[in-house]
Image (cartoon, rainbow, N blue to C red):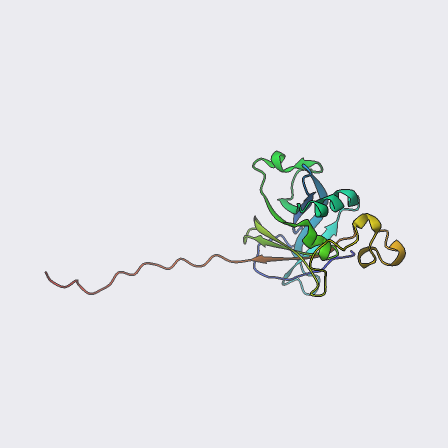
Length: 202
């Protein structure tokens, strides 16, 4: 899969023949609906099977609304990612419709994502049983990137840094995604030990 990075961490209980997947959505600016982007799959590593790896599987139907993206940047609005534990079909969602469904989300200024040329890092924090706890979202901004979005081309103009020369990259969803995860085993309970000496008389 293009734009995919693997990251291996041990210590989470996942069936070796199935794995655990989490659905990834995003919301651009003030849009109310969540748009599906794909899935993050955590499964045994292909190398030796002793560790686990996270893989991003892009939704082939995903298409970036460049006009909405440009509007988000111009209005200094936020870009939001939402991760939902896999289950029933959730192809059409809004944040208000999630109700009590287990999910986590993170937001960043839309300009930060534009300055990164759509390069991003998504990190899940999950429990030892695979339950979602939090998500960290970070645009990977080069030290040489512009400090603001004022002089950057809009996505509608197909900037070379994202779409290649003369818009040669016709990818409908040109994000470059790195995914990883972390899981921590709970600390053992430390028993309370009462002092063996008697208190002073008096």
